[in-house]
Length: 424
Image (cartoon, rainbow, N blue to C red):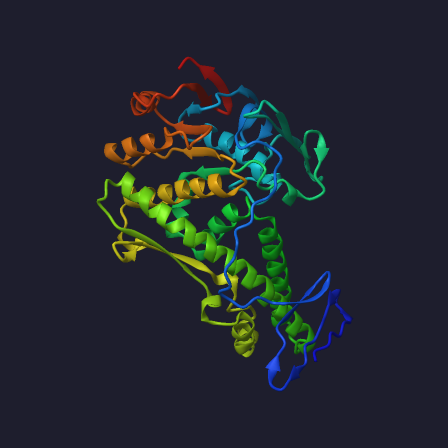
């Protein structure tokens, strides 16, 4: 039989599993004791948060104070389409980022909250008034003073943990920065999976957080000059394996369901001119993650960090069987990313409690030929889409694109951080 031995060392609880008869006990330590770990590859049921709210929620009113270059703005928005026109660098993306912040409790671009505050200001405030399709009112508020803790509230009640808010206001953001999904490192593609899964699966957020914490602690031990405590090292490896395999199973299930939808959308936008693929790659596909991590412990010690685990997961993006990074043109890359984001939208709409996400489209029509633009407008004009926010640098260009779409929309000009409603 196995036993659990606990002690305190450097603030971390440790445990040990005995090997009996050559078999290692693959157990994870939880708040309720010791539970058996599911083997890699076990089927996962996608979990949705239980909401009492209705399926459609739109942002009626947005108030911004001292957010990036926007000193103050109050916007009454259309329930279907909102268009923001202005030159580059005027604040269009910052406005969309404020909407994103109200859904995710953070900026899409700036990791530190202090970076989103106007340079000459000592606080920022974001406030959104939402309405459900049953007429219920929701108010979301975020305020922060420089150097102090931020306060995030829903209906005037502050959250104990920000993770409690994630998924309440599902949202998909498409921007030029998404080019890093193809051109950048694997961390960009892992983030793409994490952003979507976290909106419908709260246990995933917890597993990912616990995995990252164990990974960070193991890496700290690997960097030490003295030999790490073997008992402590084993515990951290067990925690990485337990939570890493949980993360893997949910990522694998997500990609498996997302891929056929993504390919259909790409075919629609490209008029069936190109074939694309999306493949999830993980060390967990090789077998037990615990065995894989422990097998290279000596090599990890030499390198000073963990070489294996779900923090190395990746998505292989291909065009005609070859890497998009090498083969894709600017238009093809943009089509690939947009199709991927619209597939995520469809996935969230069906999975996140059946709620229709907000869709933010930042300068998406640039570098796309007219036939692709026409297909995109036709796609987002469907009943499956709810409230949409679009930015563009040219009003005449946008008017031409939207002509015949049947959209009713509001038009706003953005200049130097000032936002004003214009006649549509």
